[in-house]
Length: 299
Ligand code: NAP
Image 1: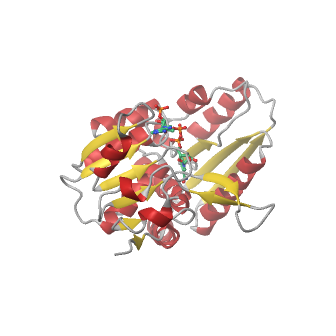
Image 2: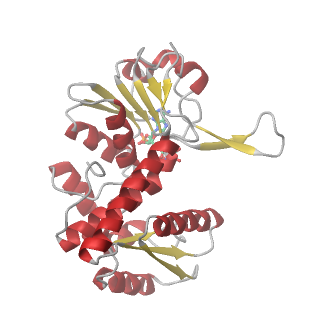
């Protein structure tokens, strides 16, 4: 039977709706408006587009959006001074620096300078440690988005075999931790894993974040499994010369014949990332002010 296609675009709209409702509640009942500050260093065109989307969606859910643009040759000291100001600003609940930053800057040091309570990208060592040790953490947005999609499809993940292919700090490791928190039996696979197809075939939940278009074939998938495809690769469009299209890590045509449910690319995981950034900003605001958090928007 053909797999259910998990509609990440529609689910992300639901998440944004929930965020907007809670923002309206915070404003009306507590006079508090969540605020997200985004720092963009340099002129990278793709980063500009991402920052624009973040700004628009932040404003659309009723939050304050603060955009800070710095020149490509901005010094680390200058960026840290800006982050210090944002860390101290009670109207700013989330701070993020759009990556990649120019080569003379260090992403890890930049993230480390953000107050962990405002680290809405969930990329700091503190956030990663809190996630591992089971404390309330701000969770990296894409893994959080995948978890929300999985929870919407499966009532209880307890005892399921979950395989995460990819072990990056940005995605694979936090995703594996989230699945562990849900009481899955978790395997993390990577470029040195032996018999990757066999490992994948054991998964009730298969999450793939590698960046190799179409790597996971239909016969790597356990019949009925839930497949979350995080990979994004831009390739030339086969039918429209001169244009490109996005492809996931999972070969959709074969996988969707075997899986029970699958996220498409585009329109699966991608739209969840900014929605979860907004959810994290709201969560950070509620925690900073000792106010009730919305249900179902965090791990
Ligand atoms: P990354 O840092 O490059 O990590 C890739 C991971 O894949 C590594 O752990 C690597 O293993 C593993 N890998 C590479 N080749 C492999 C192979 N042949 N077999 C098994 N594992 C292999 O990438 P990332 O940041 O995690 O992102 C992965 C993909 O997800 C990319 O396509 C990215 O664009 C996409 N992504 C999408 C979103 C979104 O939708 N918003 C967000 C984040 C990422 P080693 O550790 O052994 O090298």
